[in-house]
Length: 174
Image 1 (tube, one colour):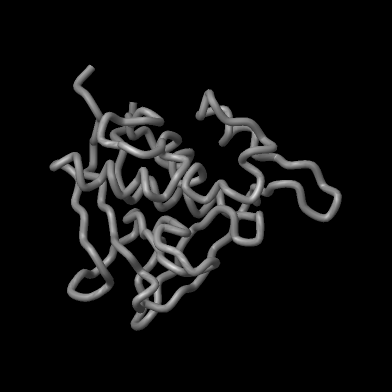
Image 2 (cartoon, helix red, strand yellow; image 1 turned 90 degrees about the horizontal axis):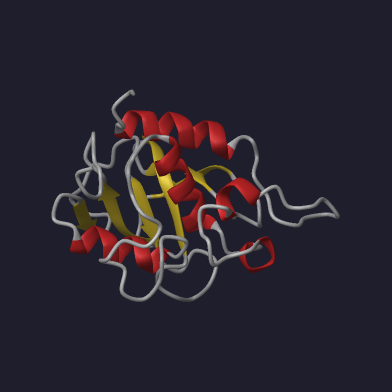
């Protein structure tokens, strides 16, 4: 089995964002079942319009990273929630966590947490960095108007944090 890497995660995220995945939009039934299936207490109706973090988890598992949907570090929610990703990254010392956009050079395969992108609240969105440009990042994101896509976003104060999962990472040795 090929070792999971952040480069592989970026490739998979790019491909998955272009499927595109979507919730119920314009009379077209949701195709989120493969993503939602990873969260046993969730269903398509609950996920509709709230699945950006679940998309990130789906891409991570497809890349081969061994991460449970609710690691012990997640105190308030599972990895279908942006806050769960932050709790997990801060709680597992093997994962790099960098607060804010300043002083960090994101790379393809890093996870980016956002504040106040769609709502005036913290932890409201998440994506996977595909490329860092001069003043922007290109990211694969789920649930942008209930559809996945590749989005260019400024490197600014909407970026809450970056998370880097190390190559070959498994939550627990198996």
